[in-house]
Length: 199
Image (cartoon, rainbow, N blue to C red):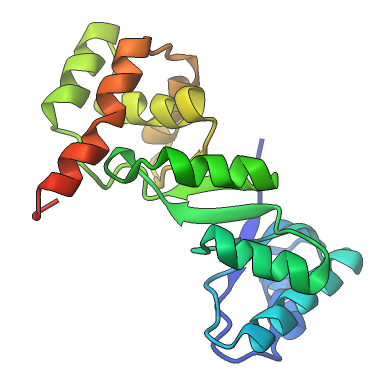
């Protein structure tokens, strides 16, 4: 199943519609599945105005869903208060080293899909916890990390790869069943990372 997503880096508010129209033309589609606001603007009024343009694009059928990227829960609330509609998705950098149960709970409470990018960046695929769990399941550390996102925390994870063999291997992670102990061990990597300045 494919999901065509594009982002709008709103350095110049006012170009929303034209930017999305150009993306649709380049992609050769009439509608994207998801359009994301790349980052929150410092000016709250300007930020809300851009979000209104996103909602207008959804009403016009240019995108099936609209969301944001790199927003804190309070910023999600501000958009919902200004427009009456909460973003459907928030795409945030997330991996075992950045595990934060409170952040995940805040998104669930708001009904916002938490989408994690850069899932393999930290703590490093050669970390002993990941390699030990991978060996126990006959899997790769990459598959373990993806399975941790999907099964343990219901995170829409997007590992990046252009190689067919790696894409297939990544998809196979959906069938990997981690134990409760596996999940707890991976969760604690975030605490360890916070204690290590180099992490």
